[in-house]
Amino acid sequence: MSAALHDLTLVQLSAQLQSRAVSAAEAATHFIARRDAHASLGAFLATDDRITLAQAQAADARLATGDNAPLLGVPIAHKDIFVTQDFPTTAGSKMLAGYRSPFDATVVTKLSQAGMVTLGKLNCDEFAMGSSNENSAFGPVENPWDASRVPGGSSGGSAAAVAARLTPAATGTDTGGSIRQPASFCGITGIKPTYGRASRYGMVAFASSLDQAGPMARTAQDCALLLNAICGPDLDRDSTSLDMPAEDYSRSLTQSLKGLRIGIPKEFFGDGLSPDVRAAIDAALKEYQKLGAQLVDISLPRTELSIPVYYIIAPAEASSNLSRFDGVKFGHRAKDYTDLLDMYKKTRAQGFGDEVKRRIMIGAYVLSHGYYDAYYIQAQKIRRMIADDFQQAFTQCDVIAGPVAPTVAWKLGEKSADPVANYLADIFTLPASLAGLPGMSLPCGFGEGGMPVGLQLIGNYFKEGQLLNAAHQLQLATDWHQRQPEVSV
Ligand code: GLN
Image (tube, protein in one colour):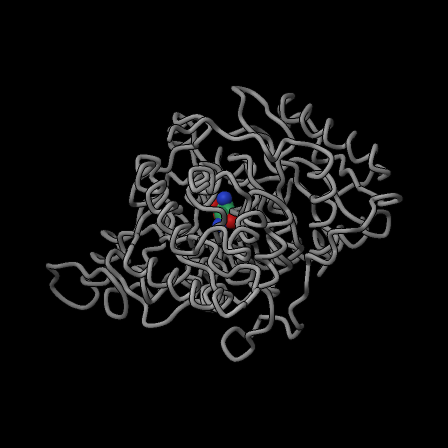
């Protein structure tokens, strides 16, 4: 039985735990072994098996009392951007090497209270800046479908670990696409909820007006269970968390799609979209038509502007957020320096990687006296127009569908010398991020090199249930999400 534990979805594993066919300790032991057998993937940055097994034993004790919390005893791993007391937190940066938080992020606390067992911390781009995981100070992550390709980013370790079945579930964060794009590149399912739906407390901040936590797993049904636990207000700790009670998204997963209007934004299907990705998206849309949905042509006219707007606003916020890494309060401090200013300079020069430095410089520039009006204020105005464009679109449709990324996962090293090439690949995920809308990625076939393609669904504010249901209905009717990369063991 235990040989196939990693082949189960989260929902299936939960049923095995509830029926006591398998114990949480057995599940944890199985996934620890599998995680270690695939260490070369580079997905995990920190593990502590004593902690993992102690959590599993605590879960077994709860299971023995008849506790039927659905996530109880199910293993999970956290993107290393969530601070944790029991494991070190690096945010993928040398700046935080060896850092240990005195508290847990709210999302981690909630999942632990739900009884999940932590397998460790997952690799990511430094401070979540990137789309290939190559910006991690601790090395890249391999895509389980093809070790010569990137897993996507910044939640690359999360996506690779789930795709390789090293864990049934992982957390991710999405500022401009970092849940959706790696989910797409690795052939798994991930959802970024509405901005504010999940607490940002204890997430190492990148761009605070955009950062949002969400789950990554094999299916929409799995994501619904995880999202149930993650969402909810945390007003004392995150003033932008929304004062809305948590929902039971699993209950949304029974709706027929008959009459659902799916908006197809023409700007997502232009010349930049590679033909293999387009073919996979078209096939998924045909399935939706078979399920009774209706495709509606819509326009999101400022899609292209989302790139310059995001790459002004996100670096601006990052330059402010990252000023706290000064060698005094957290993490790394340069060894030799002459005075305080010299200590700041050397600490930051040594601690940050190239991409992070680039963003800090761009951010400081667009916020500076002479350029604030020309760049930052303009970007904020266009951000508002992008959000308005979505509201216009949602008068014609219920959900929006399109590609997550213009191509399948690229080769390691292919774009690492060209930051702009990386930025351009974010074009289809940035609009929903700037508008604060929920968005998800689900597998919809395979493209060039046999690599997975993700379908993006974008919903209106608080319509996570509708998105998850639309994804679930497609997953009931198709088997793209069941295909697995051939990883040995
Ligand atoms: N690729 C985008 C960036 O580099 C998005 C990253 C994210 O969502 N964290 O900023």
